[in-house]
Every structure is written in C-alpha cells, then in structure tokens.
Image 1 (cartoon, one colour):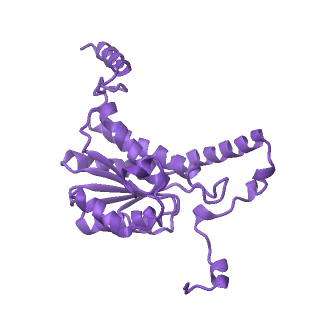
Image 2 (cartoon, one colour):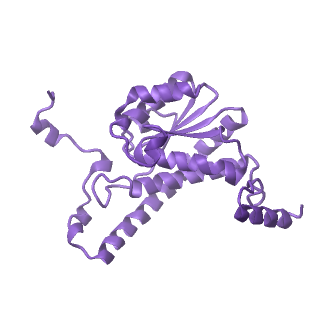
Image 3 (tube, helix red, strand yellow):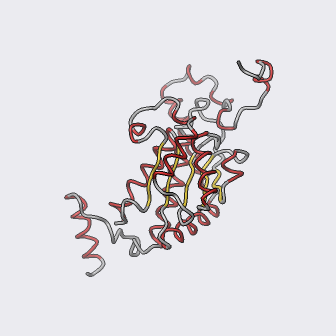
Length: 256
C-alpha cells in the first residue's frame, strides 16, 4: 500500500525531465510538418544546452584521460536510452581510435539484451548495478560515467554510489541539476534541455544531449591520448574495405 496519498502525489513537483511542454500541448492535432518543426526546434535547444557545459565537459575529459593513462578503465553506465548511448560510444572507440576494447566499456541495465529491447524493471534494480560493477572489478584507478536524463534512475544512482565507495572517479551526465546524480558525482555535466516535446520521452532531446556530450568526452580524450594526428584518425583499425581505404589515404596524407 502506498504511503503517499493521491493528493500529495498530485502536488509533488515533477522532475524537470517529466514536465509537460506548454508549447506542444496540441501536438496530436498538428500536421507532419508542424510536428517535425517542433522536434527540430527542441533539438536545437538541446544543442545549446550542451554548448553551455563546455567547461564541465573539458574538466571531465581531463580526468578521464588521466585515468586511462594511469591504467584505469572508463565505464559508461545507464539504463534504457542512456545505457544504449553509453554502450554505443564505448563500442565505437576501438575501431575508430585503435584502443583495446576493455579500456572503455559500456554497462546497461538488463545486460546486452537490453541493447535491442526493453528489459522491464531493469532500471530499478540497484543490486544488479552493484553486481555488474563487481564483475568488472571496478577499483579506485577506474572511472564511472553515470548517465541518466532524470538523474534519479535507481540502477544508475546505485552504480555511482558504488563507484564512490571504491574510490573511483564518478562523473554524471544528466539533465536535472537538482538530481542525486548531479549533486553526488565528483563531476557533473548537466544539460538543462527542458521538457520534452512528448512529456517524459527522454529518448528525444535528452538522449540527443547525452550523445553529444559522450562523443565530445571520448573524442577529446582520444585526441589527447595521441590517437589523432592533426585531425586524422591515425590509429583507425582497417577492419573493412572502407576502413582499409581510409587507412591507406591517412597513411599517404601523413607522408608515412
């Protein structure tokens, strides 16, 4: 039985990521063009929100670079869309920059099957977060990037707190400055994107902001680790015909 009355629940303020967007209340009556325009306008707002976090992203990139240089492992952790974004960015670094696959790892609530389909209840499983990090031997030399639009996802918050208990660097990527992730992380990157076009659907501009922050972080770190020459992917792994052609062109351009 709930200990919160229906009246109390109704007056309790919603997280900013769950708020209703006043400008799209008539979305279901709009034309295709108007729907697309509304989404694009909010995506632009997400880009601006990410732009305002540049100093925080740079500080986090420096700390992550130091952790990798010292032999630590960088973990991206999240649930749902946030977890998929973290896993996507981690997966793309080895072929693009030639690092070992275990240097940057993605962890998603519900395990690998959650990459392709929703795993109901996985985001609420705090014990699973602890198990997932224990299995990867998270330690004080490592870094955890905890990703959650609301900053309140139980799985992700539990992971951040576990990392702090291990002495690992904790970094939050969230859209809510008053959330547990933002308030408790060693470093917080807060993209205040505002309410979604569809209330609570943070797969939209919340997810877009997360993707932008993640590729800024990882690219800046890889550049400073010497995995880029000028602006060329000098350590790209030629694992396909396209990448072999690209590697040959880069080799020739660099005069090797």
